[in-house]
Length: 137
Image (cartoon, rainbow, N blue to C red):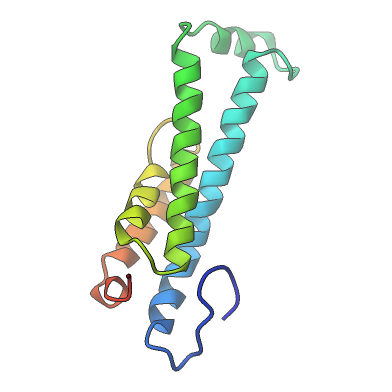
């Protein structure tokens, strides 16, 4: 099996768990990267570095002084937790962190949460399976 994390032969008892968990974990990790990229684009729009329609930029800049930076910080935190949680899933380590990473992909800090919703639910469903959970260290 190729990909990040453990590379185990098919005879290893962890192989079925990894086979089930890698696809949703990979998608949750991608959602984390997209969330961070969205936050960086928000910063660029707020600073006037990107040419965007004036009404959009005015609406974004019209937020209170603390609201926009708080949203950006929350988006970067949620994206980082999603990435770290997915990376832990690839290694079958820290089950709780993997759950937190999947839930962070759903948090409504950015519109990316709508993209993360089905993948996070898929990851949580796979994580709830006893045959997957027993292989976490």
